[in-house]
Length: 137
Image 1 (cartoon, rainbow, N blue to C red):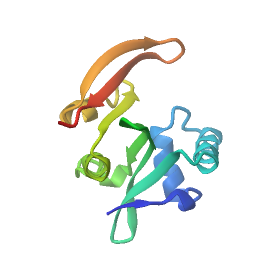
Image 2 (image 1 turned 90 degrees about the horizontal axis):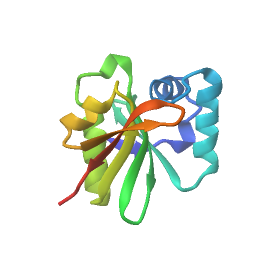
Image 3 (image 1 turned 30 degrees about the vertical axis):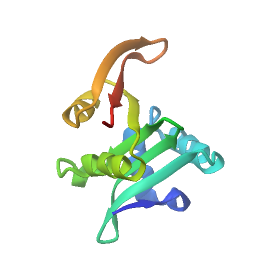
Image 4 (image 1 turned 120 degrees about the horizontal axis):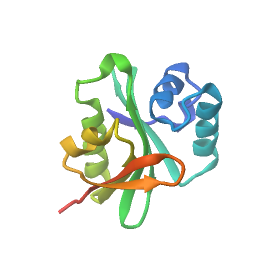
């Protein structure tokens, strides 16, 4: 089940999963990410939960014409079970809008396998990055 857990971002399991997706996965970087979500009402933070266990997290922003994924990650014990794909599908079904994300080379295949088109670019400070877009027909 895909549920809002913005009020549970201090949970140690949630913070551990955030660290997988955050640009700065240090405890300070995760704390900064948590504060950014808590203070910004335009940012949404959801989790995929099964049997009261948080298996994955997804932080995103809603725009008039699209959903922009900022963070998406799955707990290391739940990987390769389709949890990330379930979260993308939940966003598609909930909003019916194009979905966009920016990622690095480690995660670009995740998006490609789910039908996103990708475009490589060089970020000024982060190096090679990818813009990923899933068009809703």
